[in-house]
Amino acid sequence: MTIDRDALLRTVLTKVPVSYEEKDAILYALGVGFGRDPANEGELPYVVETLGLQTVPSMASILPPPRIVMDAGLDMPRVLHWGESFELYRPLPPRASLLLTQRIAAIHDRGAEYGAELDIESEMRRASDDDVVGIVRTRLLARGDGGFGGPAPPVRTRRELPEREPDFTCDLETRPDQALLYRLSGDFNPLHADSRAAQRAGFPRPILHGRCTFGFACHAILKTVCDYDFTLMRGLEARFTAVVYPGEKIRTEMWQDGNVVAFRCRTTTEGKVVIDDGLCMLDS
Image 1 (spheres, rainbow, N blue to C red):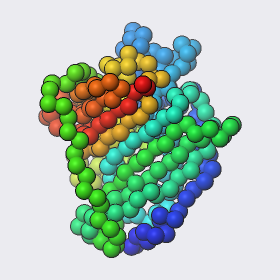
Image 2 (cartoon, helix red, strand yellow):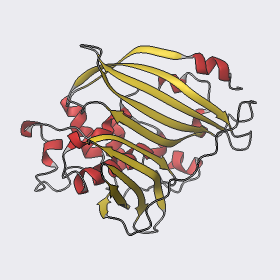
Image 3 (cartoon, rainbow, N blue to C red):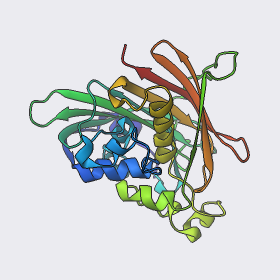
């Protein structure tokens, strides 16, 4: 089905209810590698509710429901998650009831061969007082939906990293069953769990969720730059460039300039860059 760009840009979902509990915050933290070492006192407050439960900031990325994308008439099996970002105006609490406003902020045509780009924006407000908690932005590449005659995407330049060795590096291992654990936070795409589905998509075995890799990058920055203080992180953005297979080790390379941390992630086995153009904003 051809994309109706004008109709999609007019689509706005308002007062979409989203809620989560402490166990959801804990499950997400486990899904992005927290708690692997039960003796690590910096990580235990993210996975044990009796220690003053803290919330991994990148959990914001999984809160918006996918309805606005599912209703867009896309060829969903060919949709790739291309990039992710969030801004938080206050730290995520360990439990919350939220109301979201969601819209498709931009649609660009890369041609029939390459697909369509869609930018999804979700504003989150507290249900109790309507205060804005933050904004989540998701970039998708709909590989089967290009050639609809829309405008071409703007020229985007790659963010240049400083010409020096990273100020910090952090290696985090993913578990062989990492995708099976992470999917319990709500992304049940069989590509991440079923070998047959992965092979049909061109992968030898199930791959890690892009948002899970994004969460590992958040984990690395919290651990290395923030000394596990989740209240310091105000925003995170990144572009997904390659897949991670469960069991691989992810190395996050970080360059800090004041309250801005540029970063990228690569696997330690092949050295392939799996997240690029990463930027983290810290509380000033």
